[in-house]
Amino acid sequence: MFRQERMRELAFECGHILFDMKRWKTYGDEMRKYWTANKFGHVNNAIQFNDNRDYAWPFPQSEIDINPNLKQNPGY
Image (cartoon, rainbow, N blue to C red):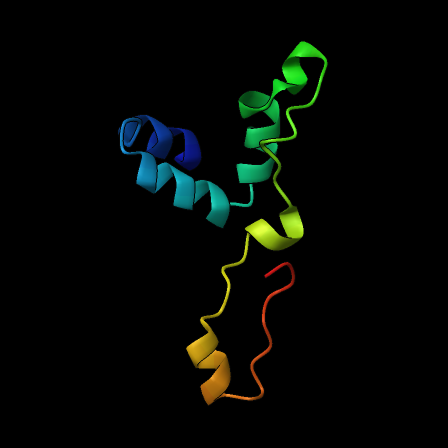
C-alpha cells in the first residue's frame, strides 16, 4: 500500500521513483516487464539490467586507494 501511494504522490518526480525502486529491489523486475521489448516477444539487448551489479554503486577509486580493505562491488 505504501509503495503505490508513494508512486502516485511522486509520479512525475522520476529521480525519487528510481531510487525507491532500487531500494525496494523492484527496479529490475519493473524494467524487464515494462521498459524492454520482452512484452513484444523479443529482447532489446540495449536495455539490460544485472541484479548483481545494478543494485549496488561502484566505490570511487580514491576511496579504494585510501582503504586497502575495501573491495570494489562486482561488475565494476
